[in-house]
Amino acid sequence: MNRIFFPAICVAASLSVGASLHADEGEGWNDLEITAEGMKIKSVLNGVTVVDYDGSGVLDDELHKKHGVGTKGVIGLQLHSFHELKLRFKDVRIKPL
Image (tube, rainbow, N blue to C red; front, side, top):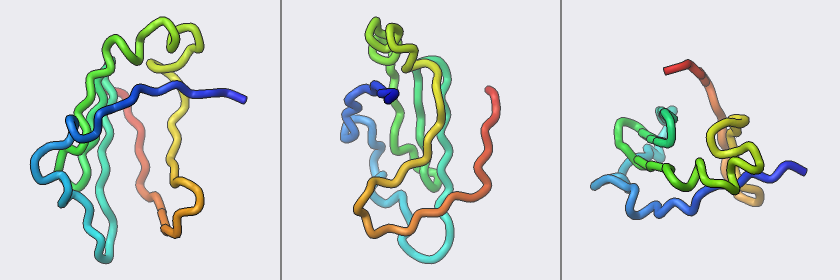
């Protein structure tokens, strides 16, 4: 089994003011843009930055390098099990920066 390592991101420290109003719970689609450039990861949901993380010293540490993760790997779209949510994806695009 492949195991993926990841940093413990302090979500509260990453959230911008008003980020709790980022997702529309009504009809329609949400717009999510994730940018990964070097060690920096930024997530913008419906025009609101919800994560702005600099993983320098974490994603490129010796443990991540030893296992070949942190700076390269697969992209996964996830919904945690046992949640009674309907989650759909559309118009997924991946492009080089």
